[in-house]
Picture 1: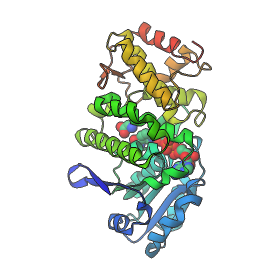
Picture 2 (picture 1 turned 135 degrees about the horizontal axis):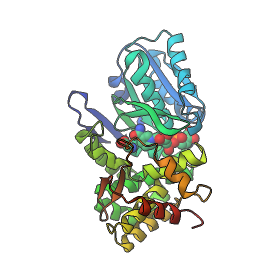
Picture 3 (picture 1 turned 90 degrees about the vertical axis):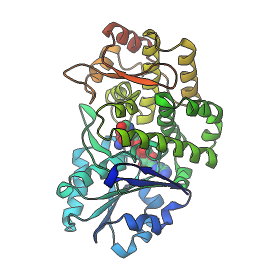
Picture 4 (picture 1 turned 135 degrees about the vertical axis):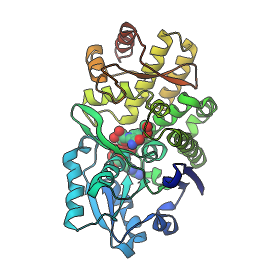
Length: 361
Ligand code: NAD
Ligand code: GLY
């Protein structure tokens, strides 16, 4: 088993990574505080893995909360189901919440933990590749608003992250690819060696080679843990983890939550960011091609959908958590394997990218 640490002083926590961890009470039990436990999952993951987690938690007689499955249910209204279950069961401030599922369940359970009685502990058990390499680590929690993705939320770190790589066996192919978008992101923001490794190992990852997947998860979590430890609340450096997200969130919101996977939006968004960097002279055309090729090999989109106009995309991009005093700030590659955050992009250049990087363009 690989154990990494998210080094946040007295709030530091471990990330455990290996096959078969769902049955490991020795990992889960020490992270539980208080006498009550509630497991939050959804209608897809519940039938697959809930029973095994409940067995480990049997001494706590855990409460089960089964949410509807889908990005379109990542709302305050659906989150209220969690609060209703906790209040109905008279859960106190020491109740531990366990998030069992992908990023949607993790973000919602985490936000419930951040806000229920002003904060209770929680544990992440991510079951998608995307959640294992990104959303379960770092304490960003929240829900969507019809006007903007992840606009309502809180920072709240988990007690531990338990990554059972066996759970990826049941993941649909398109969801595996969505996770690979965030994996590629780590290469582009500061890990060129990893980017090259991904170029060499993309076929093995798509074939679900266990060693390749375990390595990609470990390296991604290590990269993310380093960034989070340095800048937990996104005062600066952490914003780099949003490479491709301003474009991607605009696509996700524009087409309607759930119609494009989050990772698909990020993939197209990274290619759009690369295109803009080329226009700024920050990225060589051959490096843009390398990025597009890797994204395409991961079976991910490189362009925004043609159903959204460049004007619509620009408008949607203005609802972004990186906007400061009305000014858009973008994460853009500056050389392959490095990215920067900038507020100095000429509007005309951005519009060129938005116009050119749509499916039909
Ligand atoms: P998801 O949670 O919707 O999961 C994808 C699909 O896979 C769902 O249908 C889910 O039920 C199913 N599923 C989950 N595990 C499975 C398994 N083992 N076998 C079969 N099916 C399984 O999507 P996601 O890609 O995991 O997460 C996307 C969400 O994460 C977005 O809402 C995004 O905003 C958020 N996110 C958050 C952060 C963060 O730092 N908090 C980072 C990245 C993304
Ligand atoms: N996925 C972006 C972040 O965790 O900061």
